Length: 138
Image (cartoon, rainbow, N blue to C red; front, side):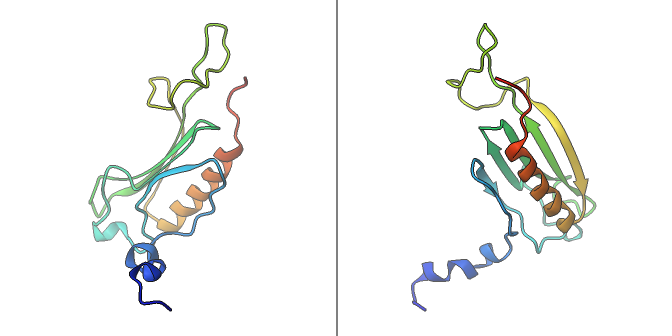
C-alpha cells in the first residue's frame, strides 16, 4: 500500500458511512449525504436534502430529506417527482429545453420512515423503477 493520502480514500470516514446503492446508467447524483451510521434519535440529521438524483431521460427526480431538520423526533422523507416533457405547439417533445424546475412537476410518490434500512430499501426500489418507468408517450 502506498503512503499517498488518495490511496486511503476508500477507507476515509466519509466513504465508510455511504450506503451501497445499485444505480444504473442515466442517473446524475447531485449529492449523497446519507450515512448508514446516522440515527434520527441522535438529532444530527439535517440540511435541505440528504440525497438528490435526476434522470433526465425518464424525467424523474429523487429527493431524500430529513424533517424537521436536526429534530430527534424527525423522519426521513423520500420524494419522487416527475417532470413532464416540454411540448411544441403540435404536442411533440422538445428536447432542446434545459432540464430545470417547472411549475408542472408532479410528486408521484412520497415515503416517510425513521429507519435508515427501510429508507435505503425504498430508495433502491425507486431508483430501479424510475430507470425504466415511462409516464408519457412521444
